[in-house]
Structures are given as C-alpha cells and as structure tokens.
Image (cartoon, rainbow, N blue to C red; front, side):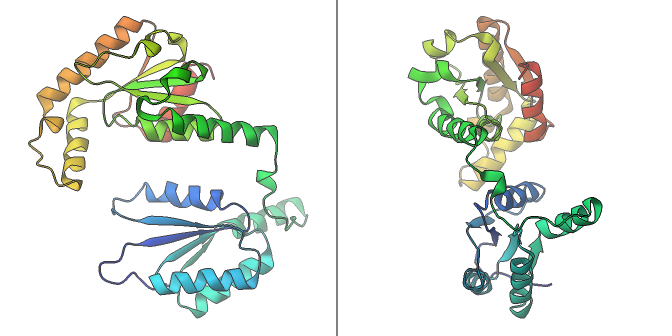
Amino acid sequence: MTGGKPGNGAKPLIYAVSDATGEMAMSIAVAALRQFTQPGIMVLRRGKVTNQDRIAKVVREAKETGGLIVFTLVSQELRQMLLQAASESNLTAVDVMGPILEQFTQYFHATPSDQPGLKYQLTAEYFRRNEAVEFTVKHDDGLGLESIQQADIVLLGISRTSKTPLSIYLAYRGFKVANIPLVRGVTLPQEARLLDPRKIVGLTISGEKLSELRETRLQKIGRPISDDYANLESIRLELQYAQKIFSEIGNVAIIDVTTKAIEEVASEILTVLGK
C-alpha cells in the first residue's frame, strides 16, 4: 500500500507499533534505517495497541503526518484491523510479525498464541538487560567513574569511534558497559587505569575515514570543515595518543572499526573478551 508523504519541511516519521512494548518494532525500524542516508528521520514508539480504538488513533496520527507504520502485532485480528485501516487511509503499513507467524503455523502444524509480550515476561534475563542499559547510560562518555569497576566492558577511543552506539548495543545484550573518550593532552582518569585490562577494549579507526566522518559532523552542526577536529594531521596525532594509552595500560584488546557495522564490532568485542 502506498502511503502519504510528509508535507514540505516536515520530518519523515515512522511509527513502530506493537501490542506489547514496541521494542521489537522499534529495533527493526532503526536497524533498517541504518541502511539509508536520509537525515532527520524519526521513529516513534506506539506500544500497547491492543484494540480497535488504539489502532484508529495510531492510523489517524500517521495520516496527519504522512508517516509510515511498522508493526509487530501478534493477534491476527488486530493485524487485519490495522492493515485495513491503513489501506483506507492510503498509508503504508509493514506487517513484520504476520508473515513469520504464518510460515511457522504451516511448518509446525500448530496455531500461535495471540498473547502479546511473551518475549518480555519478567524473567531474570529481562531484569539483567534493563539493569545493564541503565548502567550503560549512566556511564556514557566518561560519566560514573566512581562505579566503573562494576562494568563488564569498558570502551576507550577518540571521538567518533562509535563508543556510545556500541555501548548501547552491548547493553541490550545484557552487558554493563562504560565508555571513556580519549582526548589528546588530557590524562586518562585514574579510575580507568586501575581497571582490569581484560575488560578494556580500545577502538581505533583509519585517519582518512575518521576525517570524513568528522567533516560530515561539522557540516551538520554548521561549523567549517577546516576545523582542527576534522584535520587529518590532527587526527593522526589523536590516534597516536590513543595507541600510547593502550600500550601504557597493557594487554588491551584493540579493534579497528573503520569498515565494520556496529553489530560486527560488538560481536568481535564479545569474542576477544571471551563473553
């Protein structure tokens, strides 16, 4: 179904709709968006959509904004309601869960449960992951040094080496992660130097690639690309400083993130740390 598009000047919107928390729909939408370069696309979570009124509300909202709907409703009845409502409003609605459930029904010769949120029942794993995410947010970008010893993984790297997105991704895997920026001329905090090096990962990147990333960043915030932040020689000095820190700590796993996706780097981190 072809949906409406945002009006002039409006930011593209994607509605992640679910009869549970909306986390799965949100994750799928965000993962798909990583394959595109369009800036300013917003993903809005709409959870607990469990009846016709809630479906109508989401569809009205999407119609007003020209948004696209990505949904993970497990109830066949609700899926059909949403698809029909979206069609009547000339909106695009992507059914993520339906095709999988239909294939599983045929394969297992069984009818799926229509109970939403089974994945998120209050299990020990659920609480462990939530605790990991909370810890990671509080220990982003050098924060929370007083309790950094509790981290499962500590990431070190200069600016724009994907420290924060990697931390959040690993936290959703259940690991408490802290990340500390390395800034040339600024001493590494003593709390970091006292850490077990077996939980530390140093992130590095090609100078040329980092220069491109930083130029893009400068353009987005309206600063000149001639800024030292994106200067290749300055970046090389930063990378040398980072390497010096890694050597001083000793036995630090070092991972080059130049051409790798977040998921790939995260997998490599867990492998080298034996997690």
